Length: 271
Picture (cartoon, rainbow, N blue to C red):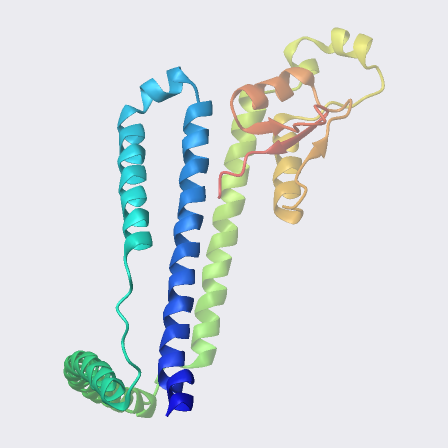
């Protein structure tokens, strides 16, 4: 009988150890919070009066939190935790409570999943209807394509080729007519310097150089633009009369190279 009184029951020993461990953990958390509060208080004190004046509201909140945490820490230190005996009845009760909470959470989750499934079914039904309409449209378009392929094309390839040749001939004739008209206008209104009474001056400046007409300059620029569009610039030589070059540049017909002023190109009016 005395032996039984000296040796406590294993359940009581485990309960006491659980309480001691829980109390130690709470005390450690309180000490950690207290250290954080002291650190904050030191930072506030080092911040200076001017900074505190700008944040009176924040300082007030920090002080209120400090008081609240201090009171809570004192309360936890004075409080004796409720000891829950770890006997089978209590364990069963706790297990039932946890199972009830879990069951409630699962019911909420089930309701949410069911509502989502219902919405997905409605979306699937709507998308299926749209798919059926598209399939019907594709089928009707396929039938139309088959009918078009079965139609006999009456146009002859030889006749089409003859029509193209006729059009090409008309275009060439029209082009030659335009070029001839342009040449006549340019020769009439923009003659060479020697034809305008400046032959003596021209020979004094460039005695062995043949000056080109505006027509020839434009033809060179056009050919350069059409045959080498990647590099349409033409080098200005002694055959280009400077007043004509200046006329083309000022009127916007020709453009000078950005890096090399001795090269010009025709403005790309066709683009």
